[in-house]
Length: 279
Length: 279
Image 1 (cartoon, rainbow over the protein chains, first blue to last red):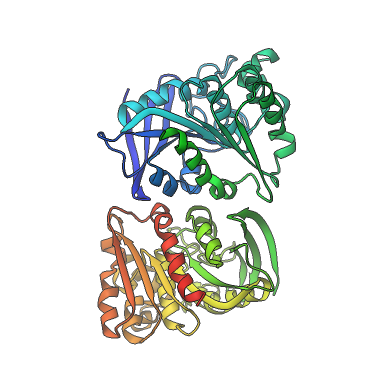
Image 2 (cartoon, rainbow over the protein chains, first blue to last red):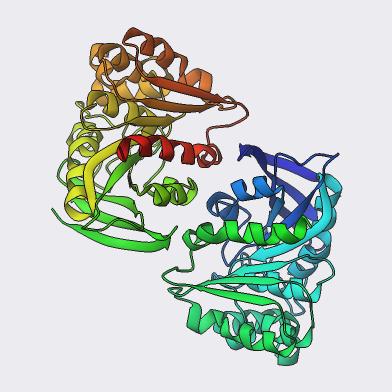
């Protein structure tokens, strides 16, 4: 287990750094980015917010566009942004933007040709945090957030591993992937035709199944072009009733699916997570 | 004179919009972006900060990465980000990143093949503000800022048109282009071999020549790879002594030439300009 630094830049009095490493879980080389707040040191390790990005993204979209650093620096929280899928010439791919590289859907694929590499669920839950905690001045205290496909990832991973995270948030998550075109396309290829197996990666199904105490904050733009067909946050509201899940869904008038939306409300999410990470 | 809206997104309770238009000055179609704060309306027109970007940039770099909107919304200031050169198949270009399209240097070229299109100085000083003031809920009160090549543009245009702007700022400006490789390459091709003609586009030379009352704020990262060879902010300090120019140069330890640097200090610049724009 080793990591290689490939860039670093001071920002908001802290540091943004990119690293590459060989992932045993994904069977390829991966890149990730970390923001370390100015107060992070060996003597003062800080908690971590994991950010999962959406379709077509890498580690860079959030770090360059989300405007998260000032709030994270003030709260003393590190942020880790992994890539959205395994990558490389030897990794199976698909011509469409919503399948294959850049579209890992944060699950463990069981079907060929995907099952040799596409294990983003295990990577996010196990391998990446172990790496981060080994190499950086951070504690094992963590929360998770994400956007769109990454909002789906944050919700499903957070709900299924509620002992490992302090809080969950999402922007514009794919809330019920079994019932939308993006999810149906990805799940049928990654997981096969047994629809019962899809439920383990569907936030609305998982919220009905698991009674968790984690707080969940979701922001959704009302002018989001994907809202009705792909995102379906109303299914989260219904699911939250089953186990009285601590879910707050904020519908934001006029906002779309872009990082302009995320950058507007990311400080709220940092402060939301900080209340639990720094408790 | 007409403009065509090509995108819009709500951000920080205001609006980011992109437009295209035919520029008579540049003899081609151009794209620009504008941020309108939430309080801008026909009944309440707002002042404008013009932002000039650096080499290789378009209107998008600043708008996506600079993290300027919250401060601009709070201060009630519009921001306009033009492209960095004329564009299009019929516009002369160069294979290198620091000449031709994406590298207009905010001057009026006098030499072939550049002189039919490369009139970014006139575009920024005259055509673009007229367009903005005709189509948007803004006043004629304006300030100017920019980064690197755009910092050079903001300083030179602001100094030469000090009655038209309330304040000037820059990040990592090319401060003395006559004396650095980027400037010498561009000026020799755009302006020819008469070095005397270069002085009209050199911030340090202009600062010695013009006695202006405008306040100027410059931020420069000490870890900027271009600092010594290309940027030379110490020449601004020397030039400011000649006419006792109101220049503040802040050297920022650890910061590089990137938008991570700009995003860290852009709120300071917005607040600096707001003090004069909203007076």
